[in-house]
Image 1 (tube, one colour):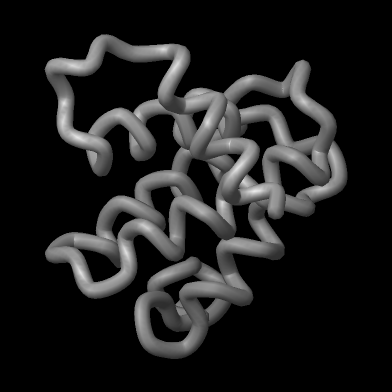
Image 2 (cartoon, one colour):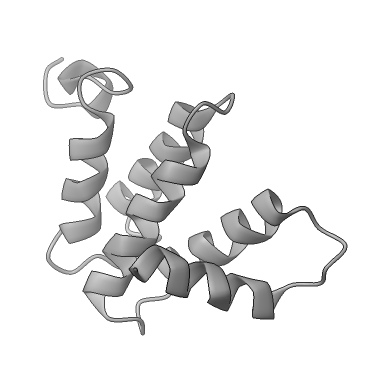
Length: 104
């Protein structure tokens, strides 16, 4: 349900010249990065982003980029909820403790 609402929102924030995928991707990233959205909405946007990236090239790379931005505090995540959600989504196929810097 939240995914459909976010998808509807995404259609209002970009021009129609872009593909649905690119429009959805950009809008979901915008919601994830914007700390004024409620944390639960940002988490649902992250889960929706993971779903639209399923079976696309560079899925792991795009999601790991968000992890690194969170770790460098370029994206506000006060209670580490986004980071925890991403780790749940990515582990163990797309990210390992060594990649994350937990094990040297």
